Amino acid sequence: QIISAEEQQLQTIETKNEQKSGILTVVMVSGLILPFSIVYNQMATTFIIQGTVMQKAFGFVDASEMNNADTLSVLLFGNIITRLILPAFASRGIKVPTNYKFAAGTSLGALAILSSIVIEHNIKKHYFETGDKISILWQVFPYMFIGAGEILSFAAAFEIAFVIAPAKDKALASAASLFIQGGISNILCLGLYNICSPFFYNDNGTADITDIDTYVTANLQNYFWLLFAIGIFGVVLNLLPPVSRWLKSIEESKATSKDSFIDRDSLLNDTFSESETMNIH
Image (cartoon, rainbow, N blue to C red; front, side):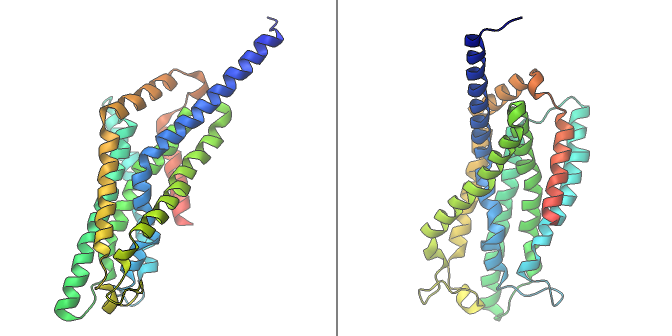
């Protein structure tokens, strides 16, 4: 069949519009896990700040070493979720909606922040009562919650981004999703930190809280409560019926598309394997 130049031009325009629409949809879907991404970024900021005023464990485990708890959590819960829980649902004909995965992952992020609030209370309580520090091992809890949340948030986001995108733009879609998760969330965290900087000031009006004596005079717990509220917002956002229907319509439209056909379970396992590698390195 001979296609005229006008028809070829029309097909080209339609293809470009489809590609733009696919990438835009990926960006919008990835935005649903921004609350979790903001919480995730605390591992390199407030978790470290908090850990510096805690007692080393076994004489060498300090705040910088606690990131290993996140890696172990990803390995542990990644295997549990992808090899036990999700297959168990699948064997019963139950498909876990993507927005439920996002909500579950974000709720684990909120639990990580709640753990940090409890730790913050214990740091000050123990110091004012005894003058001593509490063990850094208390931070195992927030890091473990974050690691478990990564599997249900980041891995699921990469999965649906790959499914949504047109065949020629799957690499671009993955990059766009990564930019939203990492780049945009970092910018938001920077703005949030600057707005809330008074919470990090000690009684002398400076941000030097690396010593336990000055740390306990700051109000870092207020920042953690704000982060917790952001996490809860993310959970509620993903559970809203309009969001659920929107994601469902996207997945159903792609489920029958030859262009995007893929084994979702295999993709999630592959994505989890990539997450393992990223955490190990």
